[in-house]
Image (cartoon, rainbow, N blue to C red; front, side):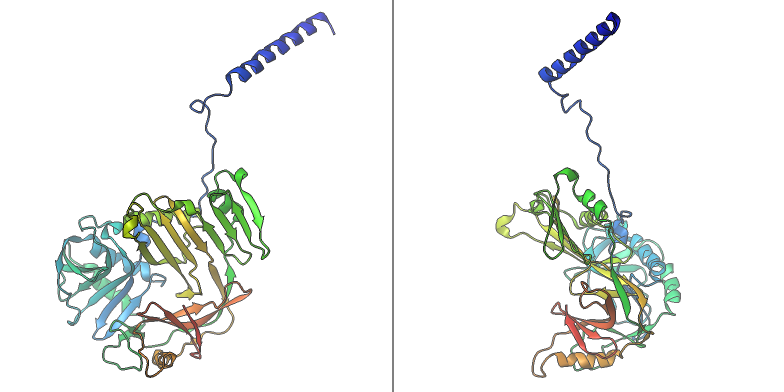
Length: 433
């Protein structure tokens, strides 16, 4: 090696020594000047706006005692929901009133929400922030819109524009299957005055059911920002647990996903219902997505006890899955979520997707026969609860089995909070939910 090469090598070693010595003495750059790590924002699907989260059951009375019914999962629902939303946006400030003229003859629109929601969530900014669970418009009083609070009080609002879309809605819904109310009928079972029975039983067939295929790696990275801190624990039953010591994700082989984060409880701030809906959509976007088959079934605020008033309330949201025009019932809801302003406390997801039919479709048992069978669920001398709703559904007895088959059934919801499921073709009792 010549002398010039030796000089350059020695100079490089001296400069490297200076750099390394400086880093030892003065350390790394401060956090203020260091470049923050880049994390990828992982989401599942689009963020559902509040106006599309809580959709009501639409009832339209065209003739005396004859109704048309549309549910959010029916194919013609979006076309019918537009005129109803037009009424809500055209309503002015509301005032407390008596009861709307429900008994009078004429065209009647009755929208029933699955959870109390403020009109502002749909863009009705001129109205107060009271939470409504029912909306009524009657041709006998076409200039007003009636809203019912969750507590039962009615509010009356004057419309700023003519309700022309309601007449157009009547023409669109006239071709739908007809329903009748039960006010003038007698059964062996107490029934609500609001109960509607179809004049013609729907045709259904059993369907195969498969588990939802969520990308597990993406879900783990969405929940845990730094996956280097995550430990994997495999249980004897085949379930896998991912945890960083503060929150945990459990994944079962049959498709169930369970997430817990106890440090999110208790809450530190109160959440208004409209904000609770926004947070629900945000959480679902990070935890698997709000698919087109999921609908809010209930939104309940859980109040803290009086002696814990420094701890704010939490919200519990339960979802309903509806596919091929009918709800899908199982022992547990497909998605349930509990959260505070600090984040998710508990999340469970076990969504099943219905596939092809296993038999030919045929009519379900007549609704009046279903009521007669349901009356046998209680002793003759015992007090029977009041029937609130009778709905055709698909029932999954055990979602963990494979392959699972969804059975056509009738779901009877009573005022004691329970739902009885009867086989759609034979009337055999299947389960209490």
